[in-house]
Length: 279
Image (cartoon, rainbow, N blue to C red; front, side):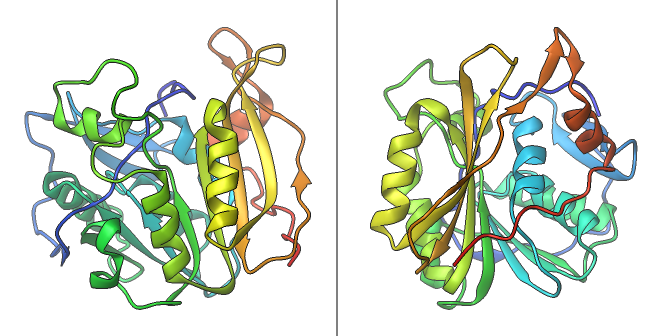
């Protein structure tokens, strides 16, 4: 995997609801690149100029607590990278990715097919703000989400649609993603987010207002002495109060040199035995 920034702008979700059919052609076009994850174990087609996944997706996939035979939803799946990583790491689970942009949802489906996960991953082009048109209530065991980090008036708005909707809350904000996740989860179901550290309070408060109690937290730092840039939070729907704060996650030992933990993640060799969240 190429070097990835931990500060990438996040994804978005979908407006119209439809199951994206598998396509027989998975080769990239002139406007796409062909990349790999886990030293070539996973293959990924991405837009050359549009949204491209980064380290955030890997961090979130390793953070969320997953159990055997579970059904997992990824809200704002982009090119489908988080479902692909989770399907690779956990061989008994089934996943559903929901994506707003038609072109990205179609690309995510191609990536599913490219990696042979057709029977375990489905991609739906749909809107988290209309989650009832996508799936039934309490139909998933866990929800994972890497939502847009920036408010519509914050920072430069990209003219590229994929980047614009990935970085800014133009089509659904944090509360929409949390509400959708809470709808999909049964009591004691888990929801995990990666989000901008400067909006940590907003994330935690929004989860609690929706009945999802934060149970595990880990701050992400580019360097050991740098301020946190991201936050990882896992909550339990209907959970009791009390939170486990993990040791900080540091990305780089020095410029362009990952820490051993990140190196292990990128190689696909880190054990995914996250601490079981309390109820």
